[in-house]
Length: 178
Image (cartoon, rainbow, N blue to C red; front, side):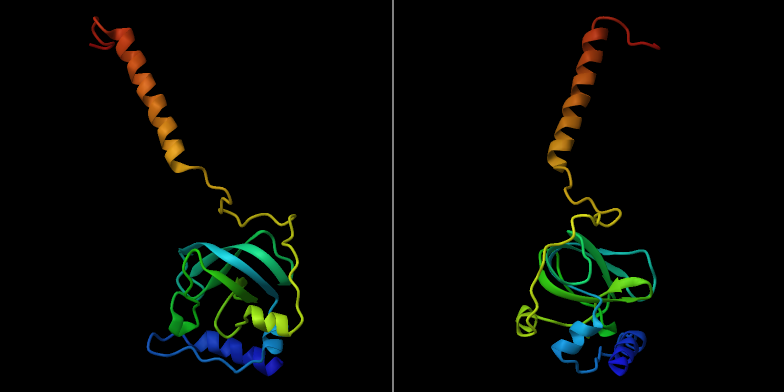
């Protein structure tokens, strides 16, 4: 198990050259589950490049469906590399995924070396539990963003009302300051 963990760390540390491919130690689903600190299923709701030059430069926020290992809230942010060749995980917003994650460089990170499927979890006899409601959403992530069209519409209506009030008040007389 220690060798497998070192192999994963080596994969993540040395796989940063653009021309190189991400190579991982072959792990069984059981080894992958054991090496992972958290395992969950979720829906990717936000993918952002972070202002961080180095590995783990992409933040992924998931709406969590079920937790198989670790203490995970309804929303969780994990990190990956921007380049697949450096063991980055390429997922688009809206993707449903099984995520196995471990701490690397002080962040929960995901990479293809820790890969599980729902079939793997079922074969291991793992059952999902609900996310922990006591864990807050990641900082800076708004779980229920306001309806931007409604917000802009209300702002526009209030602005128009202010202009109309000024026009009505000063119609027929010189505007103030003239």
